[in-house]
Length: 326
Image 1 (spheres, rainbow, N blue to C red):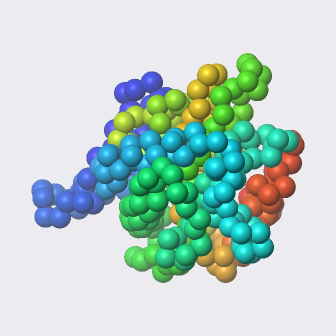
Image 2: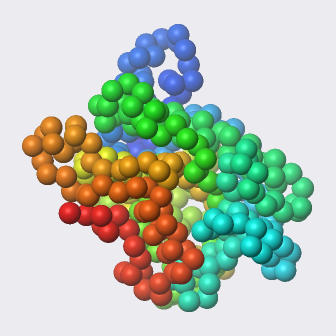
């Protein structure tokens, strides 16, 4: 079922995924259809929704956030050790710890975790249990991504299994624990600038500080913490495939005075070799011209990664999906 949140979080759509974990209980097919319709509505409006009964244990979510906070509270020199050896990684963003440079508009530090099966990760020795919590979260959020991908496939009216085959490689996904610094003044509150995610879908776990906001038709809407829930938003890949029928969610983080904000973001990605362009179902078959020229996802990711490795001082100079707009 889908409901509207009754909290002060701006009433984001709340999607209950329980029907997808219950086989043979009541009219499951009808319940799943209602969920699919709720996700479709959310994706056509803001691209943001909140999921409950998502299969990620609440105690795991709480433990991962608590251990993440303990890691970021370590001295800077200890955190700096959690990096690959110089020259050992060719990735544009190496696994491990990093902090936004001083001139960046974003004010946060983060730990980058790739698929554990790739053996690319650099884990901190402290706090104890952090690695296990991250890898458990990675596995659970991967499973959630596969489920949401199947729901999106139905939402978009695609042939059964289309997105599962198109996006079968899980080696480009990554998990990022983040810590945002407290606001330094009423004017200096940006944690991460307003942007859209490049990927297919993102999941966010957050502490009780708040600050995540999504752009709606009437302005910025808080997407604050609600215990046990996960924020989901679709990214540029879905927007391009649907030729703008589904919306890549514009969002930002506003820092609060006197408090660090902790979150974990999981990016359910696409393999870098995949070609991305509006699908005929949404462009040619409807008599509409495509809104984007085709591109290889890895090329777009390189441009987006440059936003991180060489961040522009002005948010308006950041590269986004309009780079490929027709």
